[in-house]
Image 1 (tube, rainbow, N blue to C red):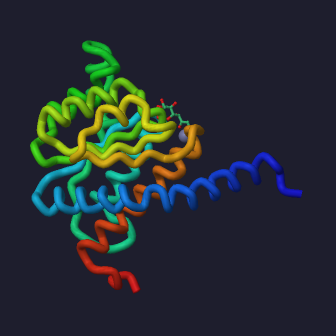
Image 2 (image 1 turned 135 degrees about the vertical axis):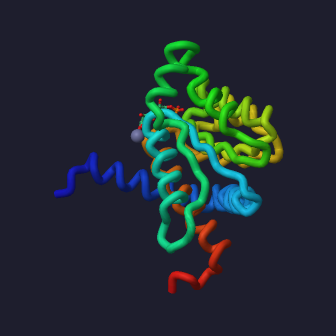
Image 3 (image 1 turned 180 degrees about the horizontal axis):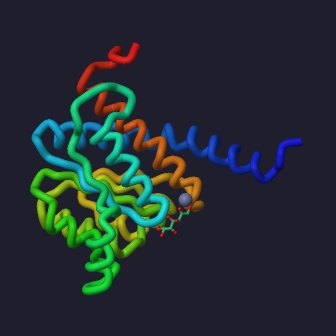
Length: 198
Ligand SMILES: O=C(CO)[C@@H](O)[C@H](O)[C@H](O)[C@H](O)COP(=O)(O)O
Ligand SMILES: [Zn+2]
């Protein structure tokens, strides 16, 4: 007899993914187009988020700088969640709220993209990073959930909002992850065409 709690996790995750596939296909396509255009113009992608989303930032950056499923040249993506000296110095000397926005200020250029993760849509340090990204004429792709929170009210009409239709952080993160792989695949299809991995 399968453990009912384990079964329930898998069932809820599977059901949400199929619902999200229909609801989010369009903003995911927009995100692919936005990223491919930015990368084609010589711009880069900066990623920020907390906890499990910080791991997603690093996962995504690794698949762009390294590879997803096809051999290609490295693509410029950086996770703003990895440099412990920057994170601890800014958190200690200024505030935890500024650990990402200071880095966006330092590294972000016009035309770059900020990939902003927040399952609640309310993490202050991600909101602060979005504010600086807008000041620096960057585009924002936000991955949220729970209705989008404050982030959903902060984005402008040139940004992309991928808001998972669920209120449970773990389930939202699981859809964020498959979304990242859709984006990686979409970028490779834009580079090589649809039959490259046949
Ligand atoms: O991964 C998990 C829960 O599954 C946690 O580590 C989660 O990422 C943390 O609680 C974050 O601080 C949540 O922040 P956010 O997604 O609401 O912006
Ligand atoms: Zn998690």
